[in-house]
Image 1: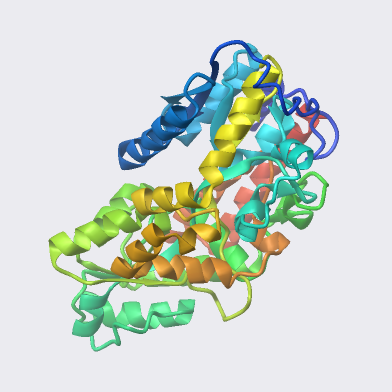
Image 2: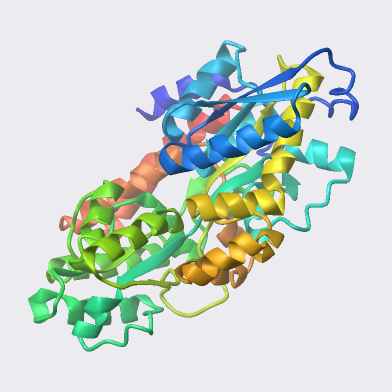
Length: 453
């Protein structure tokens, strides 16, 4: 499977050199749009549906109205993140890429290596665009060697959700969220019906590789080497069988084996629904789920609590951002098209736009100033749980660990981590399961790196 995956990648990759050295053209002239005839159309592929899609469509409509006769953005929903990047890979091969595309976080290195995109830094340098308003930890994820390759857009972070009503029934302080794995375990034991508590299970979360990535980062450790792929060298190895990872998986496994934690499998929707039913004490999930969690809590009659993502011990590190970013396609697109896409990107990054996006979707604003917009301030006063994500992000030191692993094989690595986590929760040895997955990825990494030489 690894060889087949690398072969498929090789068909679509044309870059050479290090992870931040993919070829890209010069920035278009700043007046390219003014010199264009008629309306410049930006075909924008994205993965936002439901409420998120409705909010994005409103932003597109507002932008088009403000640029009538000059720019028309056509948003086209492509499916989920995996589907969108698969379609983009095919479009690179057939030279039919859209003007602009939204790609999920772990697709970043592939996009750089594709040679098909123009780095956002190219526009930033040309215009001396002020990036000081961008949240540094968010911009940091999409940067290699201090070069911003794409514009962050929909951003999430992992947090801990807990049922305050069940906490109170178990004799726990509902206003004090557990902060470490040991504290979460203690609370889960008191909450669980196995120990006479009010919850079906004290803890439950999806078997999702993203959560392992988060725990490793939150404790200041690296997921891949060298330097999580952030220093200009290609990733040559994964290290998610390190001591931090083993301790986290052992902790989770212990809760499952004692009946304190449930095991709803890999589907995030199943774990979310279990918590939303009001029968689970604590779960780990994305801030992107907060709106749905709050609505379910109101419908089920329990009070929702939100806390920082738990660590093994307190430190200045923190979890990695998730979500997706925006990319401008290069070859096969006119200068006017690239410039129009860049202008749309800038609009989406404006504080007022980000406040609308934040309040409409729950995704974290990439703009620091958005948090001061009256719309955003009033919304967070109504839903103070959203402030937890703000505090967590602003309290996390930007390091190679908290930037996360940037590797072309990250989608495969996440799946391999899920295999290991599932194997351990079903009775396997945590260290052995993780090490087996890490070893199995060596061929994948080698084949990918060979495909982009």
